[in-house]
Length: 447
Image 1: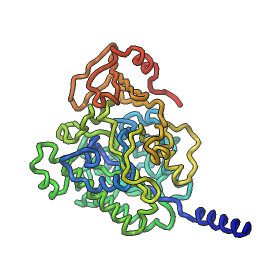
Image 2 (image 1 turned 90 degrees about the vertical axis):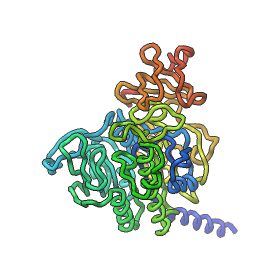
Image 3 (image 1 turned 120 degrees about the horizontal axis):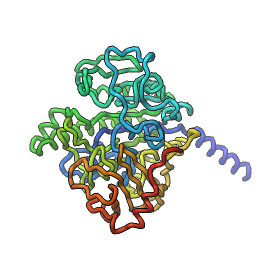
Image 4 (image 1 turned 90 degrees about the horizontal axis):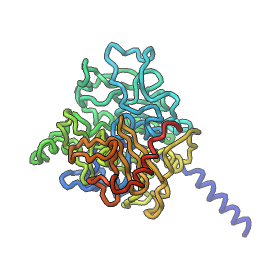
């Protein structure tokens, strides 16, 4: 009997050891508003792809990006560190011009080579690693995807491109910005969202012999709004500019559906962790027609540290391993993905300070406490701190222009986000003790 027990135990241990480590795909959308999916409350959008991810996973209602703008948000996600401490306090540089093709001989700003990304973490653990889509974290030596742990890279280096010409038409001269493994490539007239889906499927087919990590940074619904014609027709009765934005969101959603169907059809879905999040709130810039996105009950938008700039859609899905169709209201943060994935995939974390926490207990239980006692944000002159229900903002900007900011004593705005998630009233003067406590907690300037 003892020998039989030992044999069974060894057999069970062997089966666990033989189980392959999961693949990971992180889908990062671009300038998607706080409620811009059906599962997040939108009533005028068609988003079955995102909704299916939520139905097969865990959806967060208090998920925060690390910044209200692109590059800092992405740097934090990839490194698990506050962006100003990871060397990316602001957006990355514009893309190179055709005169700058010898990238190895150029220097410039970007994500520092000293930062350790998730790609490096996974590659060191034996994973294949790919960046596909938007980068915007620097394009000179030391700052490109291949310098930060990715074995393969396809996409653009700047902040946005025309989806058909693959040029950046902002901040001239016009610059062609499409690259594959540091080489300029041309796919004239090919729709960029379809190109990156094709490249992703090709990469997976070629590298499924061992686990893979893919950073799928789709550039939608960031301007220019270039949705499929059928969706422009579908939303033609919505007001401007919501109809242009809505068409681009549903065009995005169809690509999410195609990606998940590909994983299902190839039998890879059961062993692939999918993470979905927006990088920051919806844009109200002129190039975005001054809006189109929706933050719902939240104040602010892109560039703002009010909730509408940083409180965003986020989902994790791994059917058969993680809960399905469940919602979590605990406070979680984009920096949390790195330690959480290290736990789920049994890979070692880099030996450096991280600002994210392992949120696996939160994913598994709606009653688990949030691992964050305090969270910080910094954007230019703005900064914010959240501790429990209380959130203090310094020099806040309401980029959605929904309200005139109620200032109090040196530009402080205090809100109770449980009682007033829309941050409609400044509670600073009525709560001096809380104000002073949070004022003493500015964003850390060093690790």
